[in-house]
Image (cartoon, rainbow, N blue to C red; front, side, top):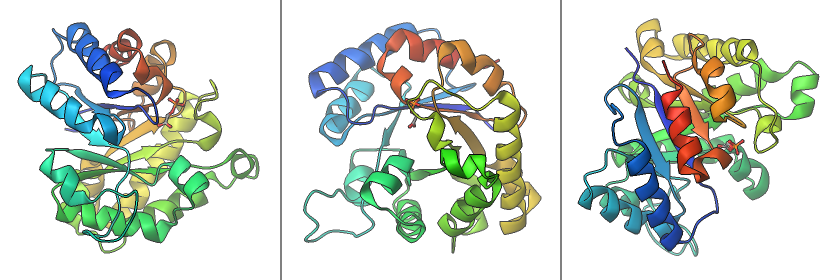
Length: 255
Ligand code: PGA
């Protein structure tokens, strides 16, 4: 059985003071939550990682800590970058890789994403590897081709054992931060396609153990229907993860 995951991608929001407040509020909102049934991760900006880690550990909160990006090199002259080893030392569990904002705004290629995925595994980090189509790709019926390419390229040289633990997030770019979401049927259809691609890359058993999330304007009002789809194993939540009550309501929307 795949344990659903709700991951909050805070993006470039919240100072470390605000991060403390948000994590404490979230701890309060989810005090009765069964984290064995639905896993919850928070992915703050780098400046709040240490604060989040100590707060989560000191208050014995059950949130997993995630990063929003990392570099594939181990160390060296890479001004502004952060390594997998640095994240591992902070007991970070997840790292979002290949988010469309990294790809579109910062020019990350499938090859960059693949290098990062392999380095993450080498450092006991679980990648949340993102894929998704633009508005025009959707309009021209290229959704399946695009996400298939991103998944195949991103997982090159990944072993079946590593693949079992990876998390994939399908995030249509036109749905991110726009208030538009894929219909539950479209989300199921694309995520089902991703699972069948994983079946050909590895095997059916590995494919059925990989968690695939939906992302793109997930809110408490639409989460229930999307998360009820057979192949949808949770959500990567941007805007709505900045509000503890709203984010907790999404976690509780999983049946
Ligand atoms: P959104 O962002 O929920 O604000 O649409 C999702 C994401 O980019 O991960």
